[in-house]
Length: 431
Image 1 (tube, one colour):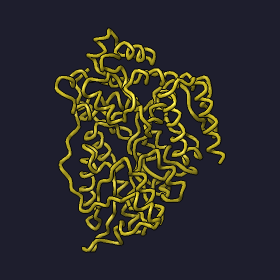
Image 2: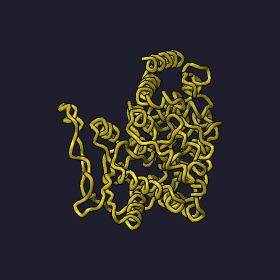
Image 3: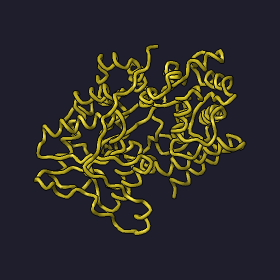
Image 4: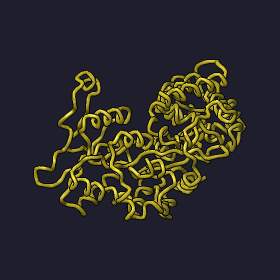
């Protein structure tokens, strides 16, 4: 396999103004937040579009946004985009408080798994009418369906992906294990490697929203599902239980009580042999030490079905000034254009959702993109397909994450945990 290529580093960036909201103070005050919006325009008469994002300081993604914003400024000199960073860990909570207080940024960047919740609360504008005049509906990844509510699209997906297996070639060879192509092979290799401060597998083993995605990747990858598209749950089915058992056995070979960033650091320092993640993790391999980096490789996730997810999406808030709405759509349309979708792929080493965005130039620079595109094309979403489930994803995620904690930290039978998970999911949707 060709050597891994790191991301293009982003130059330092200091936004013109930052609004770091205090969740504790907001909750204590119980009052509407104010002063965070950008008003009707700038002092120089230009329209200002406020654009908070956790990616404003996130490596090659920030570089793509900055290039896009600069191009937008040339096309729309009457519009200023106020792009600034908020931390990801509290990002959705901060935006939820602002939207509830009717204080909404004009450009809404969301973790895509939360888009249906925001749309279901009436906080986002349907883009269906505007999108009909573009080629987005026919050129976008099928994972764009995650943006739909009541048959209308409320956003444009910026990244959909399939899971890959990241592995340390030296650690596998030391255990006499080939690169696994099945989950059983992966778990056997992990068992052979674990010991002496080295772990065969890496995962999030402390309570965290990532518990949902990691558990669901094993279930969906095994060909099962936690829920059905018609509103039912299948957490206690034989197929799902088999996927939960695989997840549990893999995590038995992982360090306990760690978050995703700790997992990543252990992999990059040669202490973890394998982990599952999306294409965006490739950029982090460049930060590994000289002794470890050459051994770090990527392959297809070892499942019969490619588990996939949606990373982030862009939206327009409901109820904004018509001039700002038109300017926001112009920005979204530019981001979705062929040129900027190809540029996204080249800069971030992630397959953009527009068909044909993985160019020969991008593959020459990052050969793994060919694999990432194939996996994205085959991916089956790990997120709920039913609309009501997607609107209540926060509650579903919390329940599934609690079940993951039980699988990780207790000796309770998997069948018992699955039965309780089924009951709690059904009760949550009935209440």
